[in-house]
Image 1 (tube, one colour):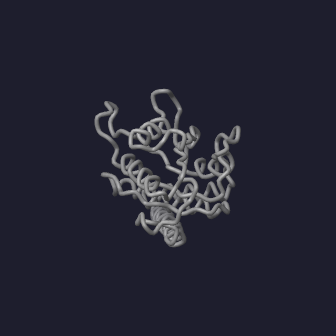
Image 2 (tube, one colour):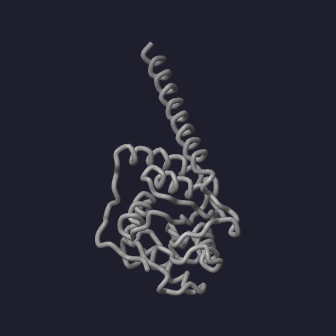
Image 3 (cartoon, one colour):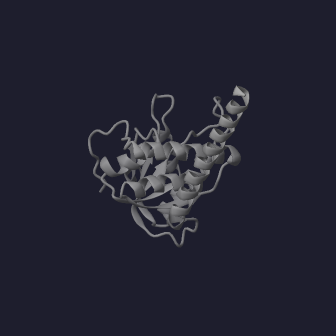
Length: 212
């Protein structure tokens, strides 16, 4: 008898979890769809683009470039060269001198023709939530363009909408592990909802930076 009750309980819990993940993902995707842009010609101009960080390399030997990273760089360069943004904030993890996403992004943008004076580094963008909040509270931007892949853009926009920040997003091309990234994103969105309910803040703030 106990075994049957336990199995039924486990099944019910699993079904509830699946339903929760599905509902959260549906709400996030449907509520942000109109703020996503795939076409460079149609996206409105904003003063600042927020380039969300990810690892540059897929291997420790630094021989295989992460396509998610490369495609985000391509998207940011395209926006800047088309006059759709005037400045780029590169936001990511910079825990050590050996792993510094903002510095790598800045260097690659400069190599592609974006002037250094047009790039600002956010070294405490440890999570998407941190990047969005710091863009507003540290860099003083209430309106900006988010740059990442579409599934990531949706979560970033949802956070911004919840915080009353006016954002749109330019969708970079996907990488080479789409199924894994999509699966991870589904659970990341559930964690995001928890953080928003708890009013979780960025891990670090600090001195304000004026972009002009």
